[in-house]
Length: 325
Image (cartoon, rainbow, N blue to C red):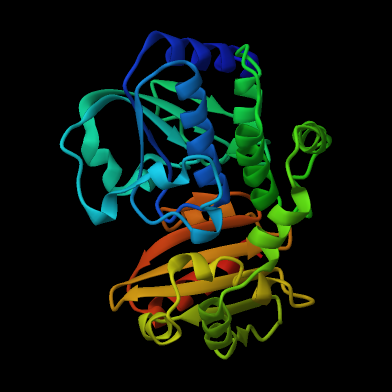
C-alpha cells in the first residue's frame, strides 16, 4: 500500500499528464465540497489545463464569494453536450455520491478520487485519500504545496473555507495541530477569518430560522435520553421557503442536548424515501451505522438515504443506533 506522499506525487503526475478535466463533488455540496471543487479549478487554471466544474445541485448562496463559484455548473438545471474521459472527484465518500454527474463520464473514464472520508473505498484509477484529514481542503493544501505556485487570496480563502466548515469553526475533534498550522499560513496570506466565520457559521436567513422552528417542534428523545431526533417534511420546506442548504446545522440541536449520544435529522424526500443525517457525541461510530443503510461519512458525522416512510425510517435508524450503543 502506497504512502500518502506517494499518493500526492501520483496525483500530481495525473494532473500534469492529462488535460480537459471534469471536476465534480457530492450532491447537496457543503463548504468543503464547494471549496475543494474551486481549489482544484484554481490549480488547473494555473497549470493551463482545460476543465469544467460540475455539480448536481445549487451552490449555497453564502459561498458565492469564493473564486469562480458562479462557474460551477448546476446539472439539475440542464445537461452537458458531451462526456469527459478524465474526471476529478472531490469530497465524495463513495462513487454514487457524485449523483447524475456520472452521466457525463465516458465508460472508460480515468477518475482521480480526492477525499478524506474513512468509508471511501478507493473507486478511482488514482486515489488520494487521507482519512485523518479534517477536510478534503486539507488534502488539497498539501497537494498544492507539491507545485511551485504563488498562492493568492483566492486560493487561500477557498482552502480556509473548507477547513472552517468541516471543523465546525475549529471546534471539532478533527482540529489538529496541522490544521491550525495551515490556518496560520492562510491568515498570513490575508484571509479574513472573522468575516468568513460570521458568513458561514453565524448568519442565518429567515427561511432557515423558520425551518429550524418547524424541525425543533418535532423533537423527540428515546426513553433513556441517549438518542434525540427531529424531522422536516416537504411541506415544512415549502411553507418556510427553505432550501436544502438551510437544513445544515439543524442536526446539531438534538445532538447537543446533554446526555444525548446520537442526534438525527430525518428529511422526508417523499412517501418512499427519507434522508437521515447523524451526529455522534463520540461513543457511536455513525459512519459504520450509516453503512448499514448504504450511506457513509465520518465517525461523528454521517448520513444515509433510507427507502420507506418517515415512520419506517425512524424505527430502522433507532434500532440500529441502539444496537451500536
